[in-house]
Length: 270
Image (cartoon, rainbow, N blue to C red; front, side, top):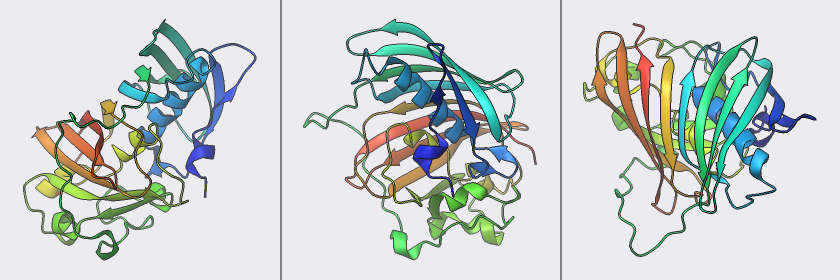
């Protein structure tokens, strides 16, 4: 089992802003690498590129990733371009190549936001207690996506109240909720939240639409470094059409603080 830190750690080369990495086959959905995992890899490369000059810029405050092709597990290269180094935030662009461009993302890196009495945010949702939610297995094909190796490294537990689609009873609402933690016991990092913001099944499953839903573009905002412990994750469909869907996800930490939210465009392949 590849732990999160090891699986996302890029190795610097002799050339500034260039890295190599072995993309880990444990972090896959079916045969394809998980989109949030890939963004976390790019985010680490961005952070490490400016670590000497901006050591406090550790939080991917804003990320917009575009998936050009699905990279395979195995060797890949990363190229980081620094667009601006600011005192409060830095802007960078990162490209992952594997026989050609595979994933590109723009980042705004800055310090994690500390909690203040003036914070205004949605309250954490009430979920079925985590210990009463069954862990999602890695070896089943209950939802049409094939085996799910990532479930061995990310302990994901759907709230049974939103998991009727697993038993042929989707609610039709297009909303899923559950818990997510790293199976290794590692704490979630700000970069790791990019995994959590994409870890639930497509919310279209709750509308009776099963099958593969590859992400085309994912935009995420990470607000803060999460408190240690399992995250609460809620995901819902904003709009679903014949072959595209727009989906929103929010994540709260154990302290009840909203630590990240994301919006993605995905294909619907029934």
